[in-house]
Amino acid sequence: MNTTKTLPAKILWITLACCAVVVLNIPFLTALWTSVKSNADLSQNPLRWPTQFTFEHYLSIFSRSDFNFTGYFINSVSLSTGAVALTAVLGVPAAYAIVKLGVGGRRLLALVTSIRIVPAIFLMLPFFLLLNVVGLLDTPTALIIANTVMNLPLVMLIYSAALRGIPDSIEDAGKLDGCSPTRILLSLMIPILRPAIASAALLTFVFSWSDYLFGLVLTSQRAVPLTVGAANFVTSAGIQWGDLAAAASLSVVPPLLVAILAQRHFVRGLSAGAIKG
Image (cartoon, rainbow, N blue to C red; front, side, top):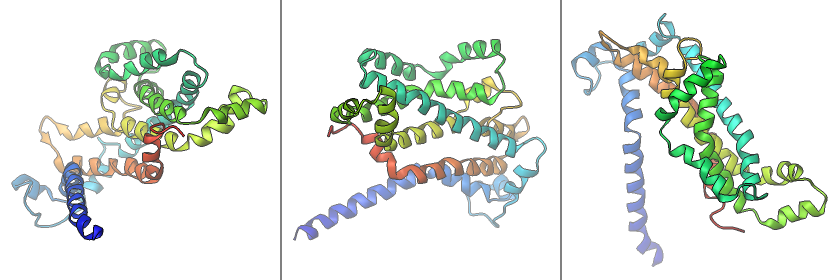
């Protein structure tokens, strides 16, 4: 009886979930659809069914002299993985110091996280001036630093919530065994924080990969990421929709793979600390 009553509700929720997935993926599906159309189809009617499927745009982005796809791709991978590593190295000890050691307390955490509320455009001039003084403009390091600053507050919130969900008895047991705070963090806390670390790494990677503003202002040639490099398809003669769509479709692959690999820990990491055990 209960199964019969809940079956329509399950069907309704599944239908709504499928509709949400389709709506959220319309931009990606549109780019993918556009990338396999010929230039003739795109010039006549971009929305109609193509007369033929073609991969000429994918071949074009690898052969064009004005679009270094491989170089842009490597730059994006470097800045994203660098930001992930740096936010983890800085965020875990900082959150541990605030939550478990009582350094600064909630006020310090609120001050740090308030940086995330500030629009990135307001920090652009200070970043540009500081990085110019130290000679880091147009380098992957500049983008790593900028994206670390913008993502570290969010990462610290995730770590802090997860640390609050860890019973104090675990830390007390480490202290009784003579462990220092550093040993407790490395040997006890970090293994428990793995789901939270995976969630923070996924969000940092996605946000850093999709960054456009820092890449546009802080780079010019050597460290241009894929998001900024794709702007080469927007010219004074018009927008080259096929090549742009092909580049956009390929740029989705790395964050998609990272999301698939981290999805097992993602929900657990975001919900950590909701219920203190």
